[in-house]
Length: 260
Ligand code: ADP
Image (tube, rainbow, N blue to C red):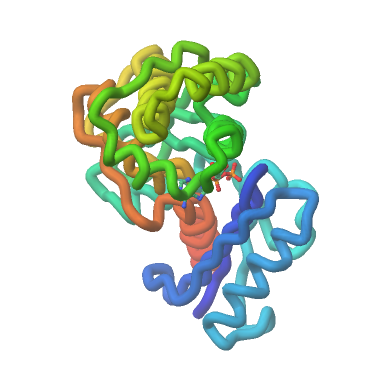
């Protein structure tokens, strides 16, 4: 039997099709957030990848910021429950999840069953989020997915002290005019994000193992500097961005089993 999880975020829409509650048979990520054609494209792409139609899917569960305006689901759950379940499936030793998405940062503590115990979130500010990374990439005239690779060449990290997106943009423009190397500026940006995220994580307290989810987790530079700031290895997987959609599919499966 097949179920689907859909995660409608502020920056990207993700979809996972799960077979028999344990096997991912299709996944999609569309870099368009809620209020766009992103949700439909994410679902269509996952169906096309698996050669299935909507009629083959027994249950659909939606999560994410845009879940209340999606009408193709049987039920909905919060991103916190879904990320908890998804990350516990991908990285079972995780007890603290740091989810960095398009517009927020969440620190979620979970138990061994993938149920969340507590969580903390950043204030309503783009600092340290995916939007911040996108703004920095635009100022530096590179793509957001290139930042991690660029930072690997850094030998002398430049300090970027402003965490506010607007002030950091001006600061980076001024650093650029002082002829610093691109890789050293990018490494400084990663440090600034990692410090901000680590401060939130420490406020809530962390329990090992710590894992990162959300699209920003695809940036190896952020994972590395966050590990340094937290003084513990932060676990990451290439599937970190679909963790919420995967958790939604796992919860859809649980609901389906309860109905039987
Ligand atoms: P949301 O669920 O809030 O829509 P996501 O968890 O999907 O957000 O993360 C989206 C963010 O991830 C983007 O704003 C971007 O900064 C970052 N991102 C997406 N793809 C990559 C990538 N390949 N490398 C680095 N960062 C990425």
